[in-house]
Length: 359
Image (cartoon, rainbow, N blue to C red; front, side, top):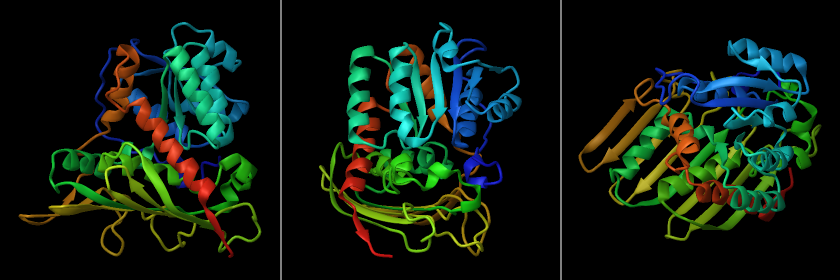
């Protein structure tokens, strides 16, 4: 994907915290179809990982990633990476409908897999990956960046787990993105490839709902998609919404869209409201419109009062170090495999249930 689209190269940085010594965790990057691979690799390197190999069918794209991470080498093929016994994990950002099959191939080769979201475009792919994980014991990790690589969201994760707002009863997640159609590859506009808007960028929202509410499962009670503003791309869904009912009684509303206007100072006004029995949290992740062009704003209202915190540079991104240690120690601190697969299942079910609204 084009480097001129800022949302594709979003790679926030904080002070690196290495959890391993140099050379203790070796990883590779392959199939670089989405710019999120830059963030995936950056997070792992900041946590002490060493990027050894880079492979892509586009030599220019592969060379650009190698240039970004000195010491990395160009691989001749994915097979060469999979045959290297020193490689612990393969990070990838393939075209979405290829991510599941690629992950199964990586895991069958004895490596852990770290894919960009969305992890699958069909339930059949999810079921296949579940079988491979059960058979091989390898990890199928997913880069849910809108929580894992956003300090305000990680801060909210801690607040919720500490009971700051009591029992969470509802999560409202808004994930607007700027389309930048001219920078998008052809596959971006083919539904078979990207899976649908609820499956794609909606996947972030379902993962956050499970995290913040503690629900282990949910039912899709409503889902809808539309193409309101892009008739020249008939397979594109530029709007999607869904409601969930968690197995613990918590509810969820999400809205995702490609309708961000040019006047916004960043690529998307991502927001989230988390309602608890004793307070609520609002996240303004990337911008505080009309006030500050910076992101990472946390608004908290609890029994003691109203609080505004800007947590940029104060929280960090612990997920990547936890993932590295999970791979080495075969633990599940960063995220359980069940959580990963349940988030994927919910986005696929919401997409399948979505009613198409006439644009």
